Length: 240
Image 1 (cartoon, one colour):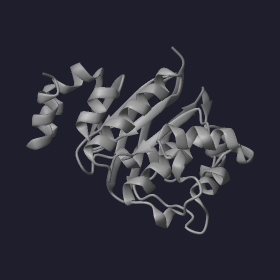
Image 2 (spheres, one colour; image 1 turned 30 degrees about the vertical axis):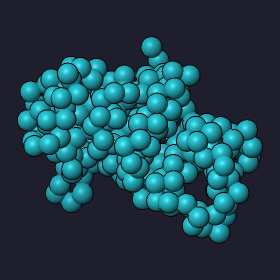
Image 3 (cartoon, rainbow, N blue to C red; image 1 turned 135 degrees about the horizontal axis):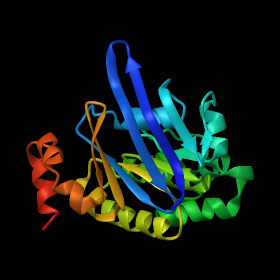
């Protein structure tokens, strides 16, 4: 299977701190890949590096093309799309207009697809201020989808959603992957990640400690140890 994204020995330092240390990761075509780890593990830093928002050493390839030296804007044009933990929307534009400015040439079909994916077709003419925080998060997801990227990086898309909304988002992301979309998903909702992803990578203190299908990862002793307390219980309980 073709690798849409490949990182090799990806490392990021902030002063004397190794935020990422030699991470090798792949997202194959049409696969939904989860990236998990305790707080401060380096998950968002990895997405920041891949999308060009922080400097790094090592390699990042999209469809076999080395992205070294490319700006975030150029990486987006090459096919990398992402969401942010704190959704930043244009408050003076309607929901539909927020998606249109991100889509290629204001592609109305792509805008419709993005809104339909998160069940916000009804909200297209509303302003962001008319929506709840959870709905604003979904607009951020829809905006990334409207770019029709080669790889969609989702950073905590379920944050602010209730259980039902999170489960429905998961079902829709799974359908996107089944339809051929390639995604990298970060989320603290372990139930969501374990239930919908094809493969999971686990970071701790910037280092990759496990990788594999959900059933193998949830039973990995190193992963269970990294998730002390409630999250560890969730890992094992979701394994049945």
